[in-house]
Amino acid sequence: MDFIPDFGSGVLTLVAFVVALSIIVAVHEFGHYIVGRWSGIHAEVFSIGFGKVLFSRTDRHGTKWQVAALPFGGYVKFLGDSGAASGKDAAALDALDVEERRRSMHGAPLWARAATVAAGPVFNFILSILIFAGVVLVSGQAVEEARVGPLKPLPADMALLEPGDVILELGGEEVGSLGDVLTVARDLPGAPLVDYRVRRDGEEIEVEAAFPLIPVVDSVTPQSAALAAGLREGDLIRAIDGAPIHAFHELRDAVEASDGEPVDLTIWRDGETLEVTLTPRRMDLPLAEGGFETRWLIGITGGLFFEPETEPVGLWAATKYGANQVVFIIRSSLSGLYHMITGAISTCNLQGPLGIAETSGAAASQGLDSFIWFIAVLSTAVGLLNLFPIPVLDGGHLVFHAYEAVAGQPPSDRALKVFMSVGLTLLLSLMLFALMNDIFC
Image: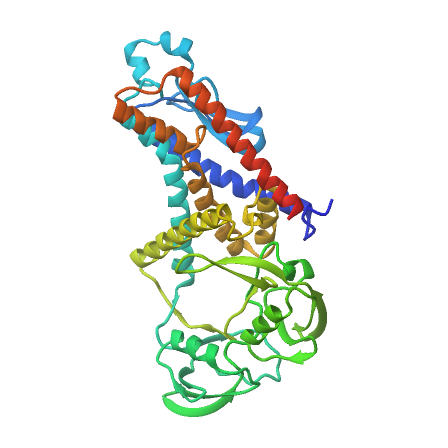
């Protein structure tokens, strides 16, 4: 069964998937729970997982907290709910007095119900913002001037700059910031050595050093040709199909020119030279300005031969960065869905549980920081999915609440049952389609 992930260990894949999903579900359901409690709605059960209960305890508020055997989701059961899907238990509601009915989900005021439903996705977005912001707070941001930080582990025969150097000129072009270095480097032809003018120990000197954007692997994309071929962070690609390369854009251009045919890479890794053959894959990439571009990719990102020197980031700037990341993911996801519906990009971009599990394992195998970043991305996706106006999802419930606000009364129980059946059918169909993508794409 070649659709089962073949990297690392199947145990790592499963554990990473369960951990990521459990964290995201716990935060989502806690949003429902805590806002419901603040709104006067009593939660009877808070469950991580479904099926047989493995562990439980009841708190002083009368809520039973439990962990169940099937760790692929979770739920909050409020007073008056018929089950995990928050359906109405009419008999139980009729047995409640006025005060108790107010503490049920279906007897609470409209504002309380709407706030409780919306809180799940909102808490997912908050989790993502906090993670993205936390990453920036820990790692800092590059200083404005192009100041060289720690050098990456590279072959001893490569001429490099020194930590602390401030780049003033690159290839004859004046640069004032790290962004200028990146812009100029993308326009320069690749070469073993490039002219630099740097400020070192208070003096300006001319030096020759390696091309700044060398073809070194900064990260490996999950479900990519590079991951399948065993490429790792820190690998330096010295040649493609026997032709030496010195700049990352030379690698990118050669892969694009391959038109999907296998390419041979010569790699330097920890003092050893390796030969790797891989086949580029056609991928749809979101653009910052909206829309997508389709390119042949092997699934790596590149970077400078040094780590830029960083400085601390303030709490507000980090939070703003986190919020911008969430907005970008939401915009890219909605744009991707639109382009899939219109046929502009392949529907294979829609992942199912196997694809998400594989990505979880790949992120975990690349380190804790990569895995945490993946959790933030997936949390945003889960929050967005739950806001879709499909009955049984939070977005569907919010549509019913909006109808009630306009019409003055909720849809009839019979209509709700029909809508819920249609919504469940749509959701299961979508999940089946995504699963087929995992298997056949």
